[in-house]
Image (cartoon, rainbow, N blue to C red; front, side, top):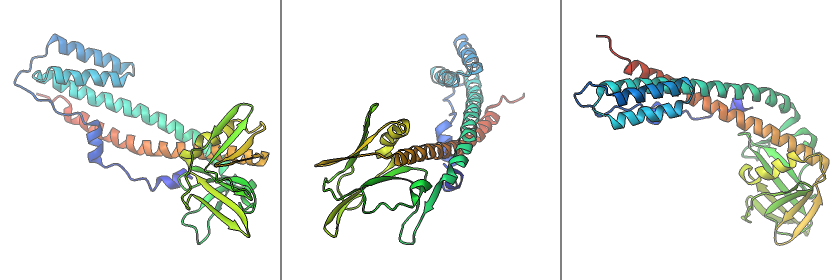
Length: 290
């Protein structure tokens, strides 16, 4: 799923990337002398780079350029080594990102068939819901439903039927403790209320950032007895069914894999560009043959 979504990611421009990893040119005087202090800093940076401590190496090289700007030969060597160090750092990061992508792809393939797409003409965008609860419309009953949007974000829709609690958040409780969603104020949009033949109904949509901890708690305690409380001016508590606990646990796992994979794909695009720029900088700063 995240491979399709990643196609819509806007790539950072080359100019912005260059600004991020720019090597920079030093203010140079006429002296080509390399002092013992500069040589020591170059050697220190080289050792750190060999140890894989790339950030520390870059700090030293930057410090050299700022501390000894008139030592043109030393500054040139520092610029070249900084480019080489950054290239090594980006390559290592890219390897880590590729590992994340490789680890997430089978998870997504494994879980994806358990979900169904829901999209009707009147909907602005569809969502995915686990097949085990897909046939039960969230209507005329008190319950919650985990859904996943096109960006891989898990969100929760709650419906409180027959009770006027004016709820704006949810709480789940068990032997391991409790977790709450963030509050969604009544706005007649994501939090709205209506009467159906005189029966009060309250429906609230909790976005990923508002319900991630709530869903994680349920996923971590899906085998335990859990109670669900609709919290507002009044509170109403029900038992969270095994089917719903499992649905949320699977949805959380699926969403996490998709989000992690999509972020890794974005990182891969960015790192690939950074490596290209660093290698270009290596060529530009390479010592010229006399």
